[in-house]
Image 1 (cartoon, helix red, strand yellow):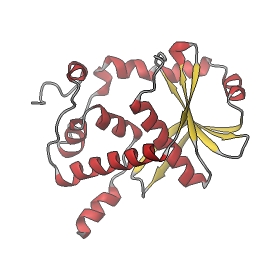
Image 2: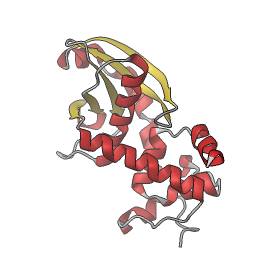
Image 3: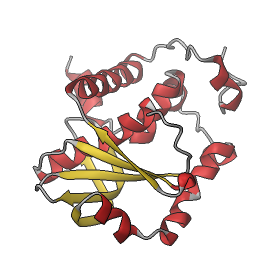
Length: 201
């Protein structure tokens, strides 16, 4: 239906929206259908995450870029895509030696010898924004874990990852358009840290 298409075209999700949905689909419902603000400033983990912007100023970024063979970079780049329905500010857009490009994102976190799905989806979302807006190949992204002595982790983007991102975006759009109440996360350990815990049943 045309009205559904019009609504869909107006929706611009942020990588944070994607992460929130992956954390629990009900975030999408409360934020977009009921328009209840999350009040992130009350969440300890989110507040800690904001410290990353202060810490970035203290990092030897040129040293980091040399390690991943980046020949150019742009910082705090705003990008958007109507086709993907996403927008966001990339910490760094890198040009690599082979002519390809990659996003680099800083995390106020420790590296736990495993790759978090949410981090990968966020990096991929930035990567696809870069590919569309710059018309360049983007095969990977980089994450800097500032609480692990600025450890750099390279993330390879595969087609299955892109398919998962498309599916996540599609699920979010369906919740917003139809206004249905989705199932909560299967991980009950996430609920105590959720700002919607008092209204979620």
